[in-house]
Length: 485
Image 1 (spheres, rainbow, N blue to C red):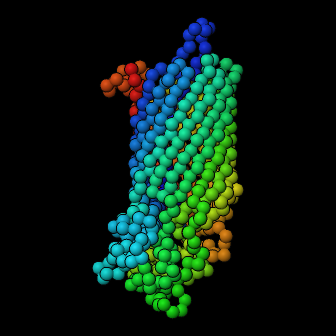
Image 2 (cartoon, rainbow, N blue to C red):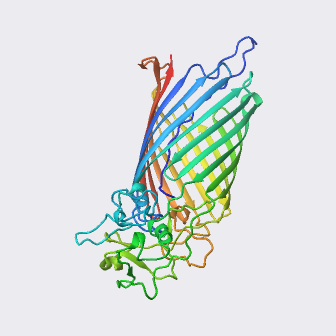
Image 3 (cartoon, rainbow, N blue to C red):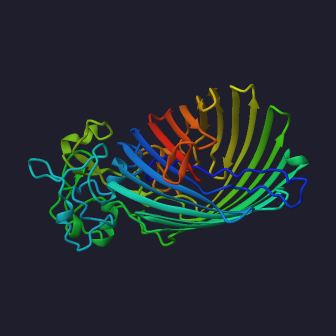
């Protein structure tokens, strides 16, 4: 994963009501246009960066402004638009080219086969340096994701049948995605029972970026005295320089990816039942199929059965895996490689209980499994507590645990004879705890105004995330809902 990034979204509410006994009257699904302005700030750090083979800084920050608009076309139909931008900087991704401090190499390689201008990170002695623990400032150090989803929904006259459709598009530094989907929902038993089925497809394409040393090795035809490597000393694991004779660094497993597509198809089944005036539960089942290039070409892998070679200060080789290493970088053996198909199946259960007018309980459990060997369990609890008629606080807790994928191994524990391999700790075995707190202000009459828009809701939340692998993160998010009056 290029970065561990959590994206905060907000979905517009759709209000259902029974048809009045007078057939000439029908309540509108959405009375007037609603606009949500959302913003989140996310920060993380850790020691298992996937771009540098499972070790190195995972420091990252991300800011995400989003706007969501719901526009009623008539009594029954609503258009929605959700458009957002996610701008981040990442220490891990920056080390696609750890020796570049200018952004000169935007494709992870060398355009003119000269290469000298890409080695701009040097110490006082003029030696080229880089480290998985130090962020470079090359082109991959930051990125902007831009995306939007546009939807349409229609409700039947009696509000017991809803169908909807949506399209989406997003693009970023090395990836574009186009999606389409739809769903139908049927309500029974005086709207106490609800069944839902949905499907969606995403057709995605890589604009692949590779670790600089691997891409440049192919460009130089394996000649370490040519192109990007010309005039650069490469050291073996004992701190001795290598020469154009004898055993040399040779990433023989590496090749450029030929299949640049990734397709995802999913089906969702849902069932919801109101049990009483105070209790409601729902079940959901998702079946997800992916095919194409499912690995990330930016992420390095190092083999246990291959000798190690470095660029930088040879005196720091013995402390390479320590954050104390500031000036030497190990040349990769390959990029991660994973199967070109994947089946994923999450099964979820929600149970909500209304204790009294001040207190409610929202519980959730999910079981997940896939054909890569990962199984996981998620359990969460949120307790909305009303403080008067307008303010509500939301303490929450979430626990997560998963097994490792069959193809995961830490830094330098894979073998070059393996068919598939990754050192991405998102695919490792771990446990995680997330603690959250939020506060919401609601004015159903929208008395506060900005121009023609009344302020209906203000929401602010904070979450702290801690993973057993050492990754820690926090996110603060907020939103303001306006209604046109």
